[in-house]
Image (cartoon, rainbow, N blue to C red; front, side, top):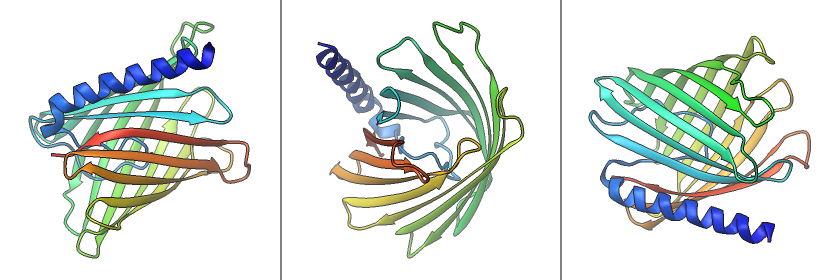
Length: 231
């Protein structure tokens, strides 16, 4: 019964996401499964939608939803929310992002994110903030991209945490590309992740799937999937 209810909840969420993305597809460009941020922002007066479902082996399945818009020229604002499917515990975030140098061979951006988590046990949000500097490089006529992030995170449990991430993206064919990523989120061993992006409808609808794990243990593994749309 529990498994059946979880599957129905996941199916319902994905159906809602598909409907929203179809409505906004001319404005949407998503890559929801990677943690490494790129150096670009959404076009002026446009918005994008990101959504994904991640099932880790060591924790509950989570659903992630994020929207980003450039309502103010040169500044991207985004709101995100992630929810544990089997409990009433959620995580919210709000971010401002701006481009320092537009991507032309290489590019730099900066972002500031505020986030918090609330559960039934602890009704008070634990606010943390994260200042991030994304850097990007293009190679092979834009068929290979390399991104790196360096940032500073302040949280009540992890003061003065220096966060980093590195990701690469390689175009294999007009329909298929892959991404490899390594990053840290705490003071323990970093994570690694690989993602596959397959275009179901060229330049419109893309299916994404990823697998990953923490580097020092085989017990912290996960997989994720989602849909993304490009203009």
